[in-house]
Image 1 (tube, rainbow over the protein chains, first blue to last red):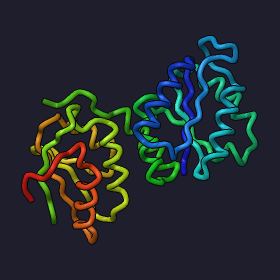
Image 2 (tube, chains in turn cyan, green):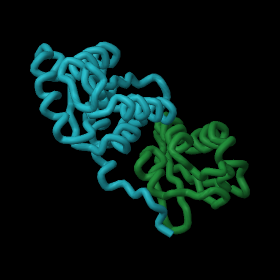
Image 3 (cartoon, one colour):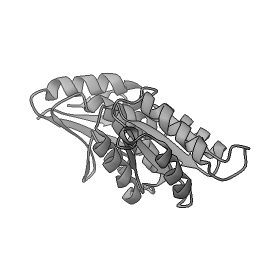
Length: 135
Length: 91
């Protein structure tokens, strides 16, 4: 099954999001989180991200989809990816998808046994998803 | 093509958690499964499509399946989602 790694500048944000994801999609999908810095401030940390990537990959035979809150997290993510072994890196897909909606959609898709490409496509659909009722 | 009319009884409508259950259950079947509300239709195997319908409480929806296991799919989906969707009003 494909796992998810949720990266945010805030630890509480990704903790809450992980709770939502597990509630909606069930707990079969591994959800790793990396939020804030090592000393608990707002920001991102390459070592925390690398740890979340490793633990999620270890629990997910289908690879892992990575979602970010803001572009500046991509710099720490790049460092974390460089820290991984190449075979692990190949099992990771990083998406532009919006963090909250993308995580929910991706997790449900992953929970039905979809491939990493299918899970990524589902997350990316979140960018054009309607939220407000159309009368 | 079997189809069933249902009234959504969950006070929040078809919100994220039941919609996700729906997708998980529907994916187990080979048949094409759709939910229709008024003139709009969503693939029941797609969470984006289902949430996009923004189904309100007490509204009527139609659950329809087309394929080799369509009867089994309808039976299973109704059983699984009875707490949210209520009982069929007609078939």
